[in-house]
Length: 413
Image (cartoon, rainbow, N blue to C red; front, side, top):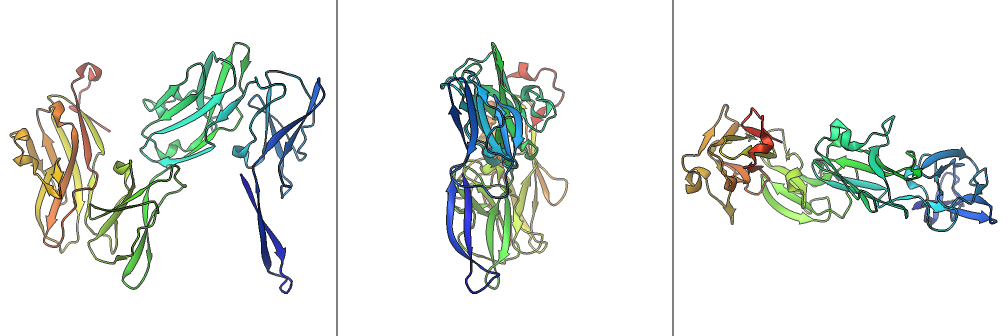
């Protein structure tokens, strides 16, 4: 949808304008007119576009021509298989729906969403539908590649992509463990017994973002916290807030509901519900040394019977004295249970440290029942790190054949 703000000159001040109204256009449409043999194509809008737009035409997904006229310069023949679409240069992702020149059974690709914004580390589905024909082959590719390359053969996506819909719609590209470098436009192409869909038709633009906590001054001695992203997340996210590792609140607003006091030692972090393991880095309200725990790995996969190390680094103001540290995997009503006191782990766990600010949990003789999330907690004479901040998820597998040839005792993600 395109939106235009209409302004009229102020009657008394030549350098000012008065808001008049807003005109919404539902976008572009291809209008097909003409006789039985030859057709005329026109790219139409409900209002006149400003800035002398350049129109782009596509036939069967392939770039045809560009012109300042909304009418395609050639008449087109009555081809039952052909579809046409138009776009405005600079806004190719807002192209019109592809239309059939004759009837409704033609080759065309319709993407479910033109734009998607998702969190780094999560999984996304990009989908489209194809016309009425069965495909003989198909693949997804990035539009920024000089030559279309099947994503399943791209080393950068190894083990992270999956296709569904081999011959008939809908077709879906699933990308897991998203990285910021995955941000790109993704397109779908296919072949039938007598046809190949072009490579230049705009697809779905994916933006991958991390989370950051932005602090702005509020009243004296207070700050406002906002969970920011580089793009607007889809699907109406619910934001979760943490203070010193303890879950605080949930909200549909990215801004924390109350200003926070500028206390040395306090740290805040945000996450999106359903993706708590991809939370933002914790930020200090004041200074650069505050309560925080950073895990070396978000997830670890290890073999049954082997040994695994789960590590973290922790910080606190220099004048805080640490009185207790512990690793745990069970908590209830704020009460955590040190693994070294758990009968299930007797003689199988050790705590190691190399500096004053790191801790490593070593678990030996791994069992499949050890698969769970492990967290670290420390207490000082002034504050205590919470128990609800996401830790490291351990998966123990007995499928040794899958890991045949591995030399290391675990696989870290």
